[in-house]
Length: 112
Length: 115
Image 1 (spheres, chains in turn red, cyan):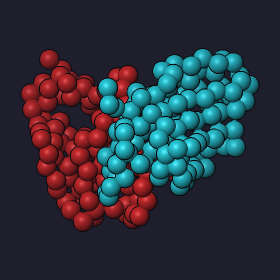
Image 2 (cartoon, chains in turn yellow, green):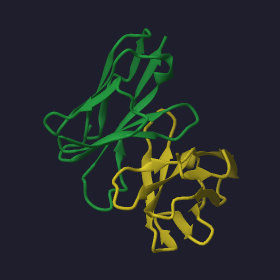
Image 3 (cartoon, chains in turn red, yellow):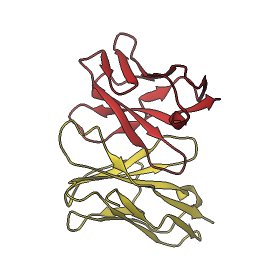
Image 4 (cartoon, chains in turn orange, green):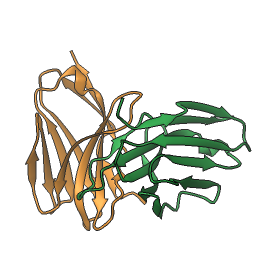
């Protein structure tokens, strides 16, 4: 079964504020954890990944944090914009495997 | 448009009919993936190819499902004797095949409705 899941199905954030989307995973053997974004009517789009031997990685306006002690992954989006409205999936790539396993998703609503 | 292309975008079929979907990956991407997504859920892995070789099939893929990538370029996914439970969005993705293979480029999907 799935080993990647999310804490909340929906998150509402004021435009301009920071967003934090959380994820719990159970497969400690995965070597990469990944965040994807899916806008309405589109396929998922890669945002950022983090290798299991790291605890933080930054991209453009996004930061991914990995806490292996509690098997927790989070995505932080700085200065949330209307274009950030989407469903966000955490995902994993099992060690020495090349498929990506997705969790259930969190819908991010941006409030004006 | 140089992204992943899927056809058709929508398909309505009667229960028991066979359907075939096509995916054209990004040129020179040697990895190709098929996923299925139902409303409110994340994409579920079905199968993937390295060039023309099918490397893995999910347990979710019953014997009514078959996928091919005959020349290592486009791929087809066929569902025989469709059932209402097959109604879903079928997503195709491709990647260059370079480690770590975490960035897959998805098409817009084929939405299947079985009536």
